[in-house]
Length: 448
Image (cartoon, rainbow, N blue to C red; front, side):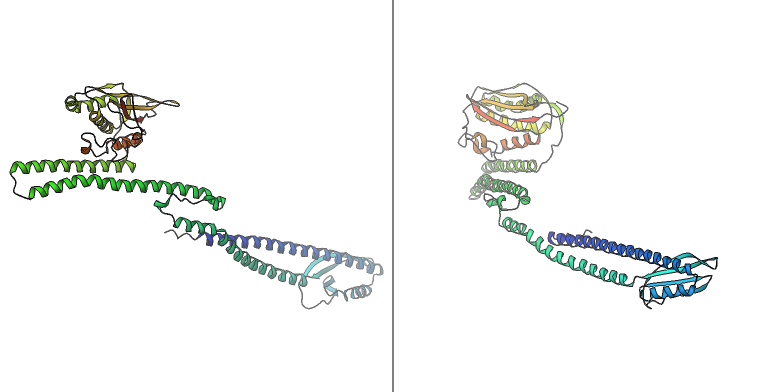
């Protein structure tokens, strides 16, 4: 199980303390090593100088050839050198030994010096040492001083670092307070990024954009709830009213059948609204197409015309397909979009006119980028101000037209959802006595 992440303040303070401890430890350890090395070099140099001096004294004493003279010279010299020790022996016999201080830490060096006496050459074993106790004491004091400097320095930097980190994170705290005061219905008052540090501005910009999208979704949800309540209220009121009226007095079977038929029509309308809303909800959540296959768009349009054949004949209209394209689509969804578009066209087309379903390639900046399917009918023009809203849920451009109350205004919204699922878009235009409404589908890489 992963541990809970620490706060930014504690994490930054901890890392600052660790880095300070490591950095000061490395620096102080380097200072200690350099100092110890310098002390060692000085001691080696001093020992070398003393060795040269002793050899010089031995050469002077050798001229006289007298060991007594040698001892006298050495006693005179080392009586004033408490920090130097000297021991001379020959053949296991001790010839001279200085008496230094009892306590001390010594650096020793062994030498062999030839000694000539009465024509006989004898090798003198010389052991020379210098006292390093003072330097060792200085090194101990330096070590404790450096250790204290590391501890105190780390503590001081950690405390000041905590204060600096807390001060540096104040803009985040202020930003938290500002964001806490925001709400989806108050996104028209975004956070001003210029009031904060440069590092926070990209985050604030993204947050404002997200809040704007949330506000749009919030407005759409509020509008959707109101529209659904309004659309469901009418058929429910009709159901309740007709049922209450039927129950006010005894009815014959024929009258009850009429009431049930009317109620069934209203229930069918309710079912249609619920089914369409479920489809739109799934489409907005990014539901994928159920199946895809390369199919003829003209063949799908012909199937839809066959379905509406009786309605077209009753309205005195004709329908025809112009163009064709092979597209990788969900055929059932494409037919559903064409059902909605052709149904709208039949309701609003001028009598004895011809409705056209036009299929053509859609050309973008880099050539063909998809296919466009449009249903064109002659009839009363649509107000240009209403064109951008045709694909909104429950929107009706002509509420007063005959039969408009039997349609709940989700047909074109479903067309837009189907176009979006195919990577396309919807379009609408009304001019010159013709209304053109349709959608596009993106072409796959294989089709290109």
